[in-house]
View 1 (cartoon, helix red, strand yellow):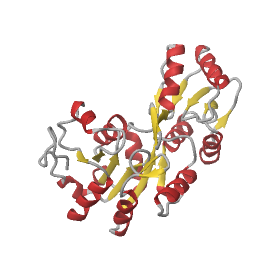
View 2 (spheres, one colour):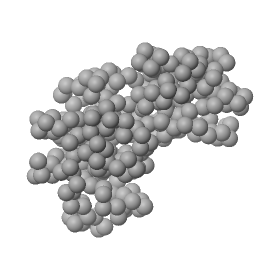
View 3 (cartoon, helix red, strand yellow):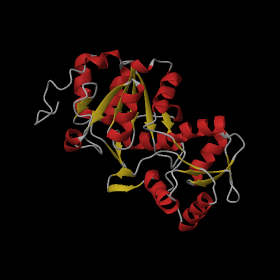
Length: 282
C-alpha cells in the first residue's frame, strides 16, 4: 500500500475484493509495457488461474485481432493465452455496428488486420467510396490521404464513430498517438464530434464481458492503470476497481483527481504489490 502523503494503509481495506470471482485485466500499461512485461504480471495471472479464478484480458487497442493480442501476450509474459482470453474495443464496436448498422458500408481508419478481424467476425463491410459511416480506430497505418478523405466525408455529412477514446498508447520507449488523438484531428478540422464512442470507459463494455463470463457485475474485479478509462468504466459499471500505479497513472495523478477519496478504489504500486495482497486474502 502506498504510505506517502494522502495515501495511507487505511485508505482501502480491500475487503470488497473477496467478492470477486473473475479478474479482468487491462493489457497495455497494466500487464505489459510495450514489448516488456510489467513486474510480476505473469506470476499474478498464473496465481489467479491456479486458484480457479476466471481471468480475461481486455484492451482498447484496436490495431490488431484478438489472436494477435494473445500471441503478443504469450510471447512477452511467457504464459499461454488464446484469442478467447481477449476482449477488445474491436469486439465492442463490432457488436454495436452489427446490431445498429447492419449492411452499412464503412470508411475505415483502421489497420488491415483490424479490418480483416471485423469483416470476418462481425460481417462489417468496408469501402473507400461513398460510405454510410466512418470508423476511426488505432490506425498505425494511417496516411494523410486516409485522414483527408475522412475529414472531407465528415464535412459532407457522413456520420463517424470512434472505436475507443485513448489519446496515447504506452510503449517501452514512451507514449505514441492512439485512436483518440487521431479522432481529435478530425474533430478539430470538421468541428464535428463522433456520435458513438466504443471501448473503455463505456460501462456497457465491462457489463458485456461479465455477461460473457457468466458472472454478476459485482463479482468482477477490474485491474487497470488509467483513471479516465479503466477506473471510470469500473466505477460506472458496479464492478470492483483496482488501480495500479505502475502504468499511466502516477500517485500524483491520483491525488489530484476527483476520485482520490473514493473508497471503492483499491490502489497498488504494481502487479507485485497486488499479488502479495491477493495471496493474503485468497
